[in-house]
Image (cartoon, rainbow, N blue to C red; front, side):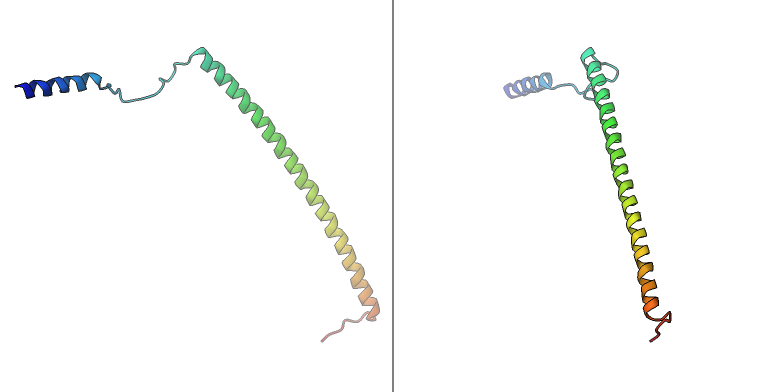
Length: 101
């Protein structure tokens, strides 16, 4: 009987120390303290500021790319003009005839 009473005492002790699980952990939805509401407002403001900065960076990046495209287009026009001059010069030196192989 001593063993049975010891085992029952141990079982009762284990049951009393165990936590009851309700199934879900963490904060309950809809329960916010005033400090959490302030934190949410600060978080929203940081998010807005980050979005403004992102849009400004995007605008600068597009301006840079547009300038780069314009420079390349000018270079293409200059190279085409130079090509025309070379073709005309070659045509004049060859007597206006195309040399065939």
